[in-house]
Image 1 (cartoon, rainbow, N blue to C red):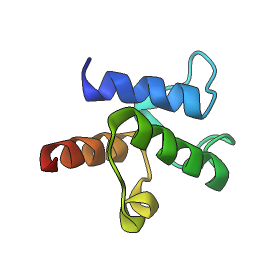
Image 2: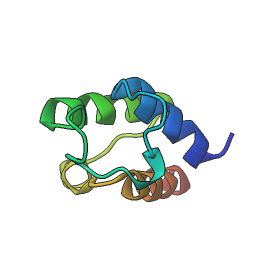
Image 3: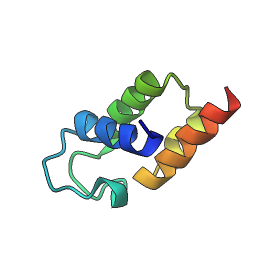
Image 4: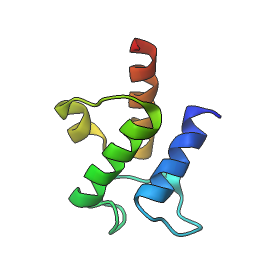
Amino acid sequence: MAVQEKLKEVFVEALQLEDGVDVENLKYRDIEAWDSVGHMALVAAIEDEFDVQFDTDQVIDMSSFKVAVDMVKELQEQA
């Protein structure tokens, strides 16, 4: 499964998104579920699913689904 598709599933589960949410265009604080607490739950879920570790700057910079995809791909390439 491609990173993007797998990451969509992580976003849906971690943020408990309802059907119809446009995950691919989702940005931090666009929806109530993606607040600071939701952000940390999302980060932990991504780290667990992809077996990666974000540094503090990456956690702060993860401002959208698209940014998260790029970050995960970059971390996987570095592994």
